Length: 259
Image (cartoon, rainbow, N blue to C red; front, top):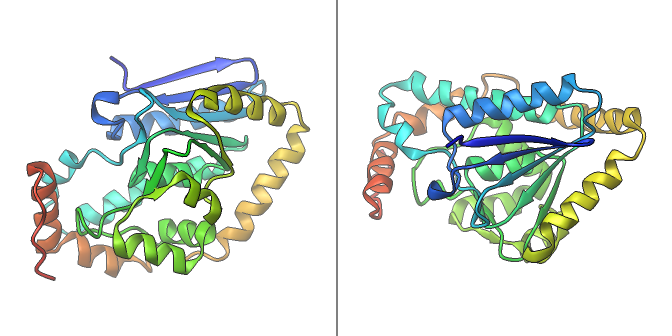
């Protein structure tokens, strides 16, 4: 079974993360399919909006498949992982067409990052957003990912979410500005389609200019490349990160040492 499904219906393209048995946890193959979808959408002038969704209705994306972290052995592994994820999210951010995340269920870790990199988010009240690495893996994000979170939520809300490792429900997410529209689960397919069609009917160059101008404004507030390396290295080379990955895969609570 393909772990991603790309479909085009008139001016609207949809990429479905199709791994419901693993709550749509992302493999690198799936990340690469996301980049490929962005490339295709940018090449096709007939596509005006790109929608992302998760299969099964229980999760948008539950994060990166943690089993992939078992092979991390040195400082470069963590740096390369965050650089690789930054490349995916930067490509998503630079798609010239408006993007919508249709969020049902959990959007955690990399899934939360994907949803927040999209231009708009439509979610159900039961949806949850968060990056619970402080209580699961003991790693950290890249400077670019922290920047996106602060741009979206403000520093206080980001610290609250990341310090506690909690997941934010749909109603609170809307109040924080993470979610643009909150709709009932039974209505989300129809409402996302209606929103995408409304956007797709508007002037393509205006949409493109608006999106790119806002991206440029926000880009000036980000850390220069490489200025996050010391923090990424500290976390990914730690005993705590190794313990977090082992504990996660063993489905037990990690024991932190601070080393």
